[in-house]
Image 1 (cartoon, rainbow, N blue to C red):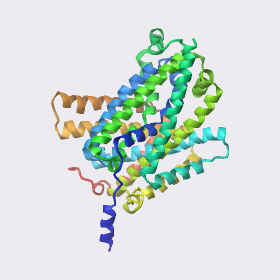
Image 2: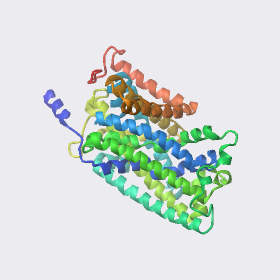
Image 3: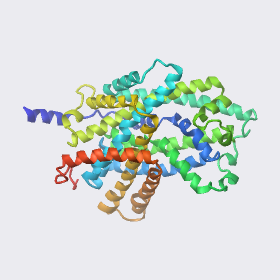
Image 4: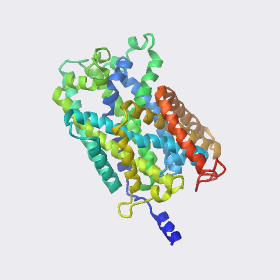
Length: 454
């Protein structure tokens, strides 16, 4: 009887229904287009108004990591994402640690988003608690990927309407002779005088880029939908690259217009942390600032739905491999075809948002995501260049130089995290290492259902 039950459970699979456009919408919603306004004040101050140039640097660097994800997704089109890529290319022990690391980002990013949402909602509607947000999100994730994708797509369109409206306000502002008074001003992209000041130059570009890199967190999550995507070997990698490039170009364009509208914002902002509100009030009026608050909050909801969807699939993959208890984490809802237990587990974990600070949540998310990015870049080198012995000019560029550049950038950003982030992150890694040690009997056994030869 048990064997029949186990066979039935193994046959349970996720529902393969997602096309390329669904994957792109998922990635865009996860990243959250309006996230640019979270760091606008700080980044424009740090860069002395050259935030658009810094986004060019960041987009270029993150594109290398997106390229690495696309390569690994082509060879391993399964829901495990970083966990699977590193396990198959390096070894299962490192794979578990990488999965445990990236899981921290996926599981704790909802907490961070809930905190931001509650801050905005408490300003407008103080009666809306985090508990209601967590419950609604859990229901959406529990019901199925179709519901999550539909919600994400609708909210992306809402943000697009707001962005179009904002561009109309900015164009009217500029044509009225305000700001730079023109659509073309090189100083709003590269200010030669400010760039050559002491303490600026290349160090400024990379220090600001390290802050802006966090705006891209999310394109990697598309890989967790590999088992629900149609033609995953082709569409998942393509969606990852498209999402990264589209969002990078959007960030460059909108920050250029923000700078055109207020060229001296970098030394005139009263409070850089509230720079987006100051900009909205100055250029579009207070009403638009209130609309921004509502749109941003709605956008956060789409992001948190996708965060929990991806985290549930990482847990599912680890449960299916026997790393985590399979009866719980590898369970698939017979009707909705979702890892429904995982959706509930993540919702419960998200309750920590009631007790954790915004700084702590941000620290843990950054630690996990950036370290995971670095390991995926290195997995390309190990799998394609070392193990498969891909050679020739194309192979050297694709499987050695490009991923090493991506790894170098993400590791550099990771090194720049404050000590608080690293202490908390290594505590999480320590807990994972203890679990792995017990699970493998002090590394005398490989993690279940994984093989160094696969």
